[in-house]
Image (tube, rainbow, N blue to C red; front, side):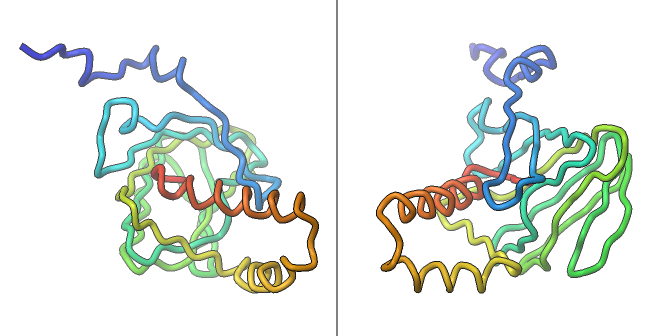
Length: 172
């Protein structure tokens, strides 16, 4: 008989596992949450619950080549920037990004926390595209030769952390 506790993550445990994440390319980025699927061993689906404080943003404006992603707003409100347009979202709203997705991003300019579920495909071939940052990366890659070893290491670390976040699961 299976140990049923391995299949259930109770609310008290979720609260104890909360971690804060800030994206290195966006100083306004802050999410507090838990990768629920990882906690229970799911390998093909990334399910997370996130809380975004007032005045904060999720990630950076990005899109996906191969990974579907969706969000379900539980409480609070946000501005969803989707393909250059902004729309206010709130409790009960469902946001989906079929692939290849359009660029998207969330921000919370309101006075209450935004709480939402995020679900995405996981795997070894996560492919994120950062439209706003594309030119900056090209310039950075070209000028790496002129940087000090310490600066090169920091740039590589930021890029790797960002890409690893995408590989670990949903990231909004």
